[in-house]
Length: 492
Ligand code: FAD
Image 1: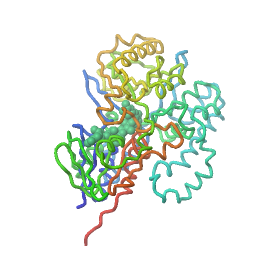
Image 2 (image 1 turned 120 degrees about the vertical axis):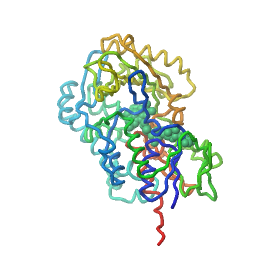
Image 3 (image 1 turned 60 degrees about the vertical axis):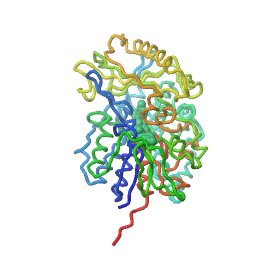
Image 4 (image 1 turned 45 degrees about the horizontal axis):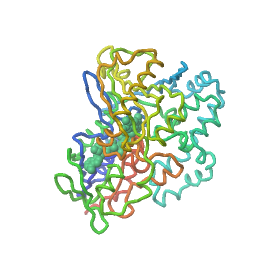
């Protein structure tokens, strides 16, 4: 039987293992940590449960697809429900807006809240949908690095419609051409952070992201985000994928320009194909030291990272929902700090995620489990202890002012994760959440392909390669790998 070796049990690695297993490979996943899931991990502390990484779940059909691929009923492993409210937004001047998950209600309520014409919002959302429909197949679902991808009617249609994609203006400029109210512009600018980019740099095509939320919806997995990685891990075990934990791979072994396996801290594996789910930067720097590296790809600007405080809170906040944003009064300065100064702004935008709103058991009765996150620069050797202390003070002051409370006295337990912690836990270069940033229009083309151009039988999946970071895209990277690997020749 042909053997496949997958390096890393992040969501991309598990999904690739499932795809290869279905193709008939005998699959072994070798993981440096003692658990599966990578960034999709969780902790329990003092009676609270916290998802450590992702908090927003979109496009669940990409997860379901993996169960269906193996003829299993998704609901036997994994359940989720659609959210009626996308996010509660708060501004310092007291303005609040609860974004509905229904497109019609969103348009009506946003028009009222931000004094923008219904037609302007409708036109914007329609344009966003059009961007997605014109480009998704080309940019997200196929390898951008194979000639065949470009020889389709869909590609020609996208090229002919290029002016409607807003590739040459920033997301902020695009949003400003649609809306006068700076708060609504800020609300839509925020979607740049979904792939760790700046709205002042990322191209306007990124306005397709709100379309994904409004059209496909936002969801909450029963039991929390961690269930996404855990249910897929369980499926992989059930279909015969072998997992090795606490075993970092130290080199990918190459002979005659072909990957022939990999060596870990414990043993050497021989395989017909190798798929790496490790961040592409350390893959080249540590596992492929003697191989030429794609310089431009590795030099790409990294996405933002995060500073997260996980707080047990001894009371409930009825005006908060699962997802909440307390906006900075100076968004431009905030992104200037993150991407140019590599620092934290004193008035940051604060994201508060509370899974106990959906899953009561995540906190003791009458309490809430707060995941309080700031977008942060990557780890460039800053004094993170100092930055954390200052950020904690600024966050508390802002929460107190916007939510009219004294939050510090309600914090019963605390865990903190910074870019260094993210880098150490997952080998994500500079602690980037989403691999490379999409801060220019060529970013998609510079991302590493899902295969190696120089080394046969070597494939790449996960958030640092094509099509990019975030759970749905990592799952798509695995799908592309599944399509690229050779079928196993059956002996008769
Ligand atoms: P990773 O999760 O990075 O895992 C890679 C795995 O490879 C790790 O387990 C690592 O230990 C292992 N590994 C590395 N090197 C080796 C080696 N040498 N040998 C063996 N194993 C190795 N996405 C969303 O969709 N929604 C969100 O709301 C969201 N929010 C986020 C918030 C935070 C704080 C973070 C950190 C990320 C967030 N993301 C979000 C992004 C999302 O988590 C990632 O894009 C995705 O989980 C990355 O998966 P991956 O497959 O690339 O691998």
